[in-house]
Amino acid sequence: MTKAISIALIVGGIVLLYFGGQAFNSVSSEVSRVFTGSPTNKAIMLIVGGVIATIAGLTGVAVSGRKR
Figure (cartoon, rainbow, N blue to C red):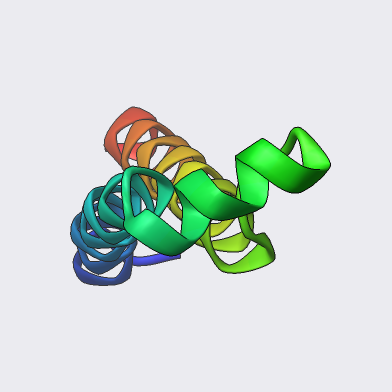
């Protein structure tokens, strides 16, 4: 994985985490938590996707930095 792709994954992961946090604190997520006890699926998927993308990007940067 090249450094450019890894950095793009990190940036994309951070953006997904930001929007996941916004969705987690939204009114619809609050209503969902009142009735079901868990936030909306959209909030969960954005946060999980952000974590996976960030970890993949950090791993790519670490691996590409070690080869040189």
